Image (cartoon, rainbow, N blue to C red):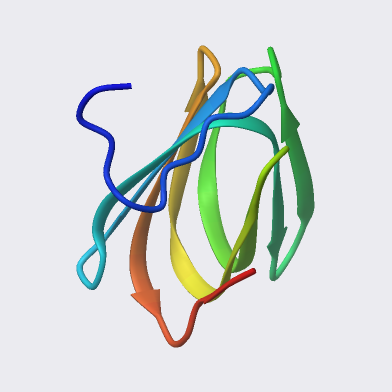
Length: 99
């Protein structure tokens, strides 16, 4: 796809994940199969055609596709999932690891 940045992958999933932070700017992941959120007070699994949702996260967000798994740890921020597009705006992030 034209205009893709480093770190973007295409897989079999139909979700798109957009992550915005002051440290990394905007990163987009296409072909995402599922997104796992482990927050301080709840755990959430977002998949294709999942109900629209909005919320605050304090914990870990994992973006999983057929080709990679991106784990963002120790984050505080806000997310919105609507029409198979997941948006995460990171307010604070101590460390992140990509595996």
